[in-house]
Length: 401
Image (cartoon, rainbow, N blue to C red; front, side):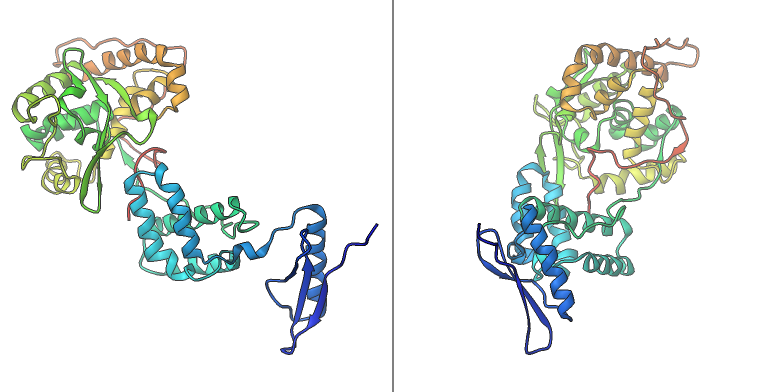
């Protein structure tokens, strides 16, 4: 049996040492770096020979592709599975914060020390911590992809928590505050605020609603599309996840407000927008915030409340009904596709009971409260009107440059 050829080390004219070895195909390969001493070269060679013998060897030449080239290839592969706004964000982060440091560096040459130094520089700059976290997640995702593609053996992005964002605490409005907000916003926006606070629909889902998506006789809203804004361009598309496609019941007082709104302000025809801009066409979130939301929250005494907090409010009010976790997740659009299908026969009935519970918030003071029924699953509760800690919802848009 022929003895496998061993690697060799030699001293270069520069005084440094070079290690060379044979890969499983019989090709002689130089070590990617030279060494200060002969002992260093021999130790590296011994470790490489061990990897070859175990079948763990990785060809370092595969990592010679420049990072910018690989990142573009990786992003092209990812794009069909990403929302337009996420693609736009990735390209922005790559162009502004990642490629300037690593663009010309070979993927296999990026080290953990390089990543740590880059991250420290970003934190020392004027960037917000959340933008730094986004940039790190992009770099890590692309290099994780390089591992999967076999370009590198392991990722240099090993800093735990470096990609975690810190978000503002969410605020949960009381029913009284919701009413005050709707009144302060004015007749044109009253139904929008009530719908957001008692249905849990996201901004893009509300802005994308058509007349054909609401059934006011049945008091239901079907979420079939959403409005997205990327680089100032407004586009309609399907919800981000399968769980986002759902039908949500609303209390009768919200249905009445919607009916009045549709009669006065909605665009005509089945495809007409339910909540168009007063100037025509889809609403722009920035315009709504500046012209309507900020003045209304100030007048209602809830300055600092975010529109997205109405979604948190809706989830909290629904949870206070004593419904199951599964029904709550389906109503808000957070259940996985398989879970939504598996529990659909349970969810339909429980969503109706959530609506029964919400009816009490639209009753006159002298009306008796509508009772709610307890369920086998433990209720999910949160104190209404309190500020509570939050983390980004898994399927909400939290990536924004």
